[in-house]
Length: 297
Image (cartoon, rainbow, N blue to C red):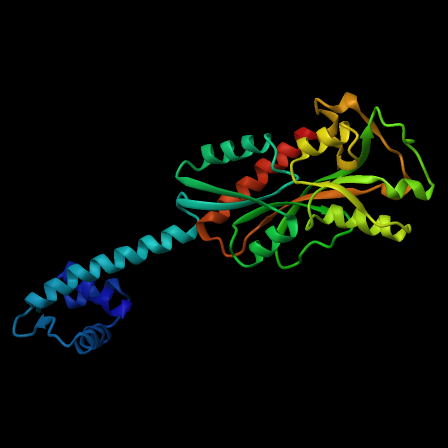
């Protein structure tokens, strides 16, 4: 019916069947059929055919006004999803717990400056949960942490921002050796992320392959609290090298060198599918993140 509505509006604006047909690249007979189809569909007479040139009936004038509103609304809808207009409304971003640190606020603030009509909606979760929500269309973008061996999901658009070594640490006051190949090492208490963290799963697998159960003394997402507990000799833990390098507690920690615990992570940003106008937000956010992680190297 949209073609018929457009034909009626063009006819009303041109005032001539011939000019309207030319503007629409139609023959006059084809234009007449469109108007007749619209009259049948609506059950009203739109043109008073007793006049030359044809005149709109009173109902026809009302239908023209409503048709203009419909066509304008459709044009606005197309513009809002084309990526050519500034995106408006929420942009749903998921951050892995390991990345949800104060530095990320700079990224969010810069994104807000680039897109002032945007309303960021931010959540934390484990990387597998964030990727699952992205796949379901519940997020527009997700910043995740994955062990380097993990295969990236092929159905999602993403980019690797950084590769980073994880460091095994204990309290500097600990009497335990910092380098050990004996089975006693694997029976240490651990301070780790809760279940769902892929790095935790990798640590668990390595400990169990070496013949000991994983003993968890504390499981929590906050890396600052993790380091406080490790520095207080509650257990050993594994955190990102860049995070440890600048942390205020680094002087109270010792690195543990162990050949079976060389773990590298991949930090990656994934974009949702079919984002429409929000695609430009996702791509700009990707650019900002790449710049941010390059500075952190």
